[in-house]
Length: 436
Image 1: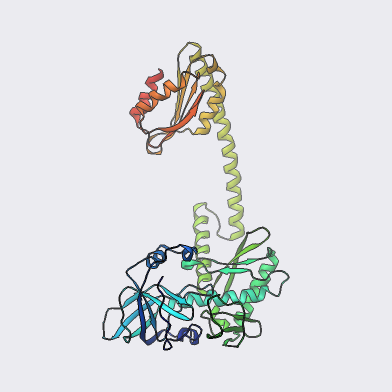
Image 2: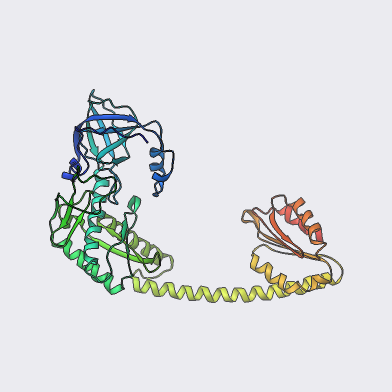
């Protein structure tokens, strides 16, 4: 991939306008350099999971890498996705905005992916999608606070984190699984700090660790993000100015990852509010469907009762199908004793039912004859099974494939099994005609 030639006129990452004032929404800047983008030959830079739109812009050869004198859009980094926004040309003036969906860091440089050539010296107005920026700041600053609170617990230091894409849940990886009691107290403590409106400050000390390998701290700036006296961490991301702007931290659930490690999912701010609203609406919808109260405890009881009833009905259904399979087995065995082949078809049946019948007649077919079993109807399709003498089954299967060209399956010896995606009545009648 082509890289923008470093220019002393461009503001370095760490001192960008968006990092000095993360609440800034627009900025006038000039083009410093513009280089035609060359897609990378290897895929090492694409290992991170990206959305379809990300992949489209990243692999678009008809784009240019543009460096500006400064940037109100944040480049991807620190676990935080890049900002999106637009450019409006000021000289020469153009009313048509240029959409920006990808901004990246190259060493100390902030580089935009632009769909047209912008000559050096051109003045532009950069506009950030502030709704996206605000969301990212809430999630990122919220993660800093959450990790700071968990650090006060034994063996709950954050190993890594990921911001959920498109409003999804975030996660932090931990050395162990926190208990439900710990999760509740951690959540309560986080939201207490949020209510206390603790100031969040940014400083640039001379020394810091945990920086990207390609970031030259001898030439660049190291940013330390402090949440009062609770947390001090090096980070290049855009952050909120006070904890009250985080609004809310909501812990969801955990799942095991990488041996004894644990992944804790969480949402912050507007995402947490939306997650809560969606959950409440889902509970109400489920409650209406099953004619239950939407009070969570009562709804859980109702669902449990329905689940028990469903399990009982499933057991009864299986017993009834077993009786029907036994009856069909007796009928098939009687037909086989006359020296004829047999046919079993149940429109509402499944492969489980067919296998029940197969179990009933598997010994009878050893004495001669072939049985064709089928289930399902219409567009839903269904299974088909052929059992019988080893030498007779392939011949019958060939005839089945002739009358039902769409059937797919396989097998050897005394049993063949297949599936039809779409049963037609004439096909079922034709198969019946093969044995009756």
